[in-house]
Each structure stands twice: as structure tokens, then as C-alpha cells.
Length: 302
Ligand SMILES: [Zn+2]
Image 1 (cartoon, rainbow, N blue to C red):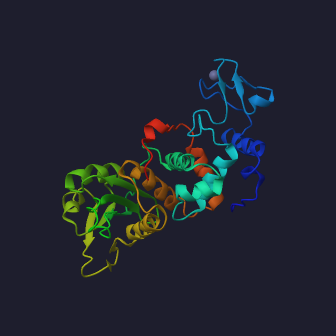
Image 2 (tube, rainbow, N blue to C red):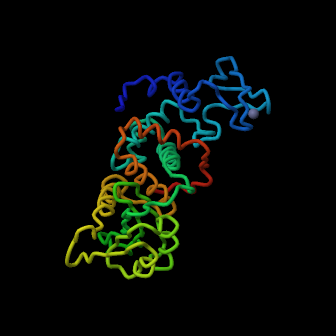
Image 3 (cartoon, protein in one colour):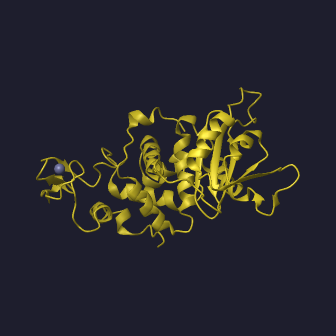
């Protein structure tokens, strides 16, 4: 299922509403997000489009309630278009470009993009990567801190990203303030099944934690890139896409929001075998049960 941006759901508010309702309540039976009751009725009247009243808790709700779209003034067809654009853009989409494409202000586009990224974040309860006979690669990368303007102003500190990738499976990446054995160990052991074979580079902070796994091997990139199954090509491939996103699209990722950018690139990687339309539906599902308020997202940056 590819994305056809001439589809009325991207232009017609009533069609967008019907699409989102069908997506959230596929059996055609809306349930109250406040109390879970299905004893609800659709309210009439033009100003109440999309509004339901719960007969049990007497509260009102719409398809936006209990999702990252709650309290947003952005029309639903723009939400749908932005979500599909984010799903289809391999290297991401800047708020600046979203502003021009959606005809909204920069501030609106920026906040919209961050709320869609929040929807892209996987559940914190996801089961560990790898398992018996499986290979998980771990690697770190540093972004930012360009020396271009070094003479004019001090170099911005580099930001460290650690990525764990199961070969043929999913990726999970994290922003880590300081990379060392103490910060990496909890991250690796909680996200990777210890029955896995761990593959890393020669960095010393993997030595200790590597002993906790079925096997650990590392390749020294100064001399060789791969020796049989001893390589980290998979995780390097992930980072090459991520870095192209940083350089080509986002230019600068603020430290405070970095975890949302990693969620964005993780999701696109983990749904790489899906069509753009299927990926957009995964993001729409991920909107439920999450909130991101402007106050929480913090000041306008990056
Ligand atoms: Zn209710």
C-alpha cells in the first residue's frame, strides 16, 4: 500500500475523521477512552462533529482523546498527511519543510513533528532483542560537534548514540550522556537476551559486558571489517541512514529531543519491509495511550 497524497483523507476533514475512527475502532464500535464503556452515542450538530458521549461516565470524547492528537488544533487531515510524510521519508522531514508543505506555522509544524515521533516510540515493555543462536550488534556513534565554526565559536559537544541491532531483526538506539562500561552495561543487558551472540567493535567498554553473553567477538576496524560472522555491518548500516538524516535533514538535533529522533529512525528501520502506507498505520496505532504537551516538550529548539 503506497501513499497517494491526492487521497481525500489528506484534504477533506470529514473523510480524515472517518478514516481515523475506522482505524481506531475497526469493528465500528467506539469505546470510551475514559472508562472503557461501549455504551456511547455519537452527538449530533455541526459543532460536535466527531464527538461522542459516554452513557456510563457521562464524559465526552473524540478520536483524538487519549492520543498525541489530544488538544491539538491542527485539523485531522493535516495530522494524517504529516504522519504519512514522516512514514515515507527515509531521512526524516524537517519542521521547516513540514511548515511549507502543510501551510501551518513553524511552531505548529515543530510540535506536530515531535508528537508524531512520540507516537513512533516503541513500548518500554518490548521483549529483548536476540535470543539463542541469534546475533546482536552493538555500536556507538557521535553526532554534532562540527569543527567548521571552531574559530568563530567553541565546538558544540558531540552527542553519543548507542545502537543495538539484531541481525535480520529490529534496532533500538539510545542517547547516552557519557559512554563507558558503567552506562552501557544496563542498556545492553536489559535490551539484549543474554543467550545472544554479541558483536561489537574493539572498544574496551564492551569487554566486561560481553562475558555475560553466549559469545562475544569484536572486530578491529583499523585492520579489518569482517571475519565470517564477526562483523558489525548491520549496525553500521543503521548509523549510515541516521547520519544522513542528521546531515541532510535535521542539521542539528537538540540533546533534549534526541530520544525522539532515535525513536523515529528505529521505527522506520524496524518497519523496513512494510510499505509506506502500512508504516503510517503503525504510527497511527502508536498515537494511542501517549501524550506530549507543549510544556513537557520544552522550549522551541531543533
Ligand atoms: Zn466513559
